[in-house]
Length: 432
Image 1 (cartoon, rainbow, N blue to C red):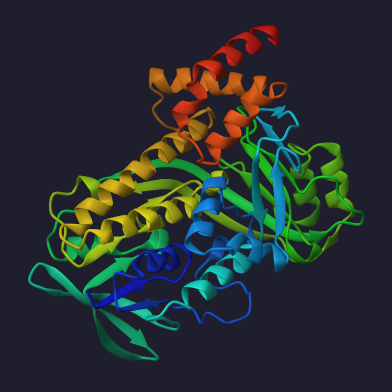
Image 2 (image 1 turned 90 degrees about the horizontal axis):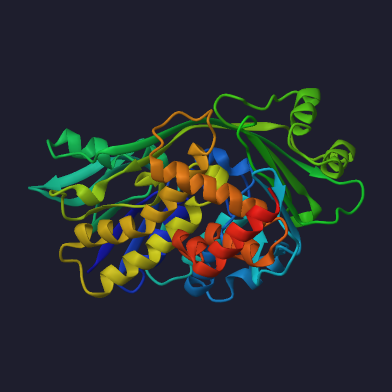
């Protein structure tokens, strides 16, 4: 195999490119942004000014792909966080018990994290990252994609390729490309959350005791926030409102909205902090999953990756970790060749996405303000999870099981293990 072109140089595209290393002689990653060498925000990642996280399993995956990656980030100023030692979680209205769950993560702004991944990917032989490059569309020869048309500085050119990967995020165009040549398009699953972030960087007046405070929405209050240490001594304040209950962007309104969910010490710390940035917003209308694994016909030479396949509600922080797991899956698929690649990869990706989508749906549909069908199993599981979160306020085993599940270190079914189930039933009875 000779040449692969990845469309999009955000986290999804970079992780897709990493999967191709060793299988293709040349890998070209194109992006419409300028991709400055400095760690800066850019137009193509409008969500970058808000709190980001790589889940626990994603951190492990990045360290496997890029040996020493976490240590490199920490050396550059990223913040290591031990769960639940340095982090305070308030879920379903209950603060999780403080204990060492054996899990640790790192916190950094999105530009720092993405910049570090891009720098690593660029070091691999044959990889070329091309900025300021707009995608026009794929080149078809018969039923196969053989390249992509791009526009650079007003001049259109064709990049011939053995494989083209649409990693252009939620706005990925593969679905419309299929329709334009009369091919079947994937069905879509959708959960309307009508969510908005409002965030700013601040610098606390005095040191804050935790490295992360995270409060999730609850029925009757579909709002929450994250207060997180970042590189350089800054802290990210990200407020979220779902179901149209959106945070305001004026100074007084921003602080007043925070009082709805934040404990007093966080309110005081934010109010006394020095603002480092303006209040910025980002809207997210709905989680969206495109079911490419169900298509019986798909053009050879084309793949879809990351958010272009499934865009999760970002409040759960799952997108970058799922992209890292998809990268691992793509690499395994390529190890046995490119025959029937799309079918094999989409099925492998679906096995990664399925449990995460279910976790997402459970969290969203636990809020009566979010529209959507709630089956009997969904209602039963949500009652169980709410009870688990209450028990996790005093039971470290339940807390660790929940943390490891939402960190994707273990499947959702693990919270139903007999030892966890017994603690939830007995502990829940004692604390009702």
